[in-house]
Length: 64
Image (cartoon, rainbow, N blue to C red; front, side):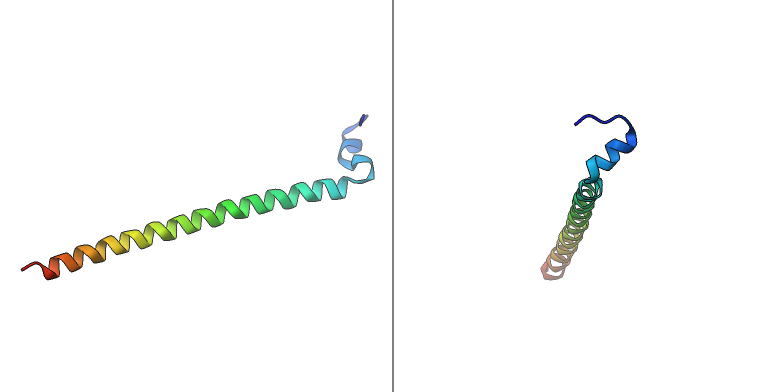
């Protein structure tokens, strides 16, 4: 396609709403996925730290 102005480019021949909407939804979903992965990773790291602390505590309690 050949656009003569920025407005023509944004309008995308009348399909701009759908094109830019698809880009927006895709960007939002990718961002949400990245944020959820970060949250899950932090939760796993926290659980591992807690497990390590508990195993150290059990070792100290069972050592005569």
